[in-house]
Image (cartoon, rainbow, N blue to C red; front, side, top):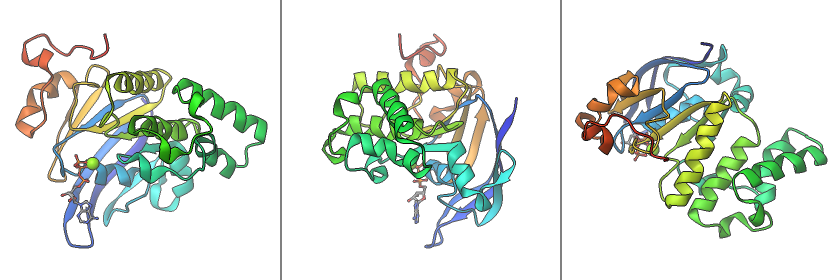
Length: 250
Ligand SMILES: Nc1ncnc2c1ncn2[C@@H]1O[C@H](COP(=O)(O)OP(=O)(O)OP(=O)(O)O)[C@@H](O)[C@H]1O
Ligand SMILES: [Mg+2]
């Protein structure tokens, strides 16, 4: 398997002296579907923000396709798309269409190509009927899908989702989950931070458990599933009742 991301002994201390992540080392390979699980405050978001250079390590280093993230921010952000925990913070466009077109405009794509790509992504995420709406008027679930659209249109190799299902209703969760599964099937590497693993565990190839800024466990879902509750993460019901890991989408 091709290695995409290499993280070597990365630590991050915030300005107030709090150590957010401690000495994290791991390799991420093309096509993996990784769950980063952990209680509130365990360091998941802090870790993810290092992957595309939003936070810088105070020791250690990260490389993406062999290039240091620190000195290759633009290339890193083309390779790794990030859907944030709070979709509102990502919004910059006046309309849903402009919001999704923004990244392509920055890359100087021609108008016809922009229209084609944006239309296709909006249709895929069931947002096309909202294309002329102001993003701030969308519901929480629609905003989440818009944030995903803005990332997908750039076609990154790796897509990082921070709590993608929080505040989504059942159909919204199904839609986002189906989108994520499709992306992984089309060779994208997926990294999802969540404290609720039940929705995605069946499709995951690996689970990393974080605790107090450290990696506590890292392995195949079948091996990690029984350790979840000792780390404050709910074990899926099917596993608890001896039925193994079952798909959430039936
Ligand atoms: N800018 C900051 N300054 C000081 N401490 C911070 C800062 N940002 C985050 N922290 C602290 O670092 C710890 C890890 O936060 P982080 O947001 O990474 O957790 P998380 O695992 O994503 O939690 P959640 O499940 O609630 O999203 C928390 O205790 C948080 O309060
Ligand atoms: Mg978080």
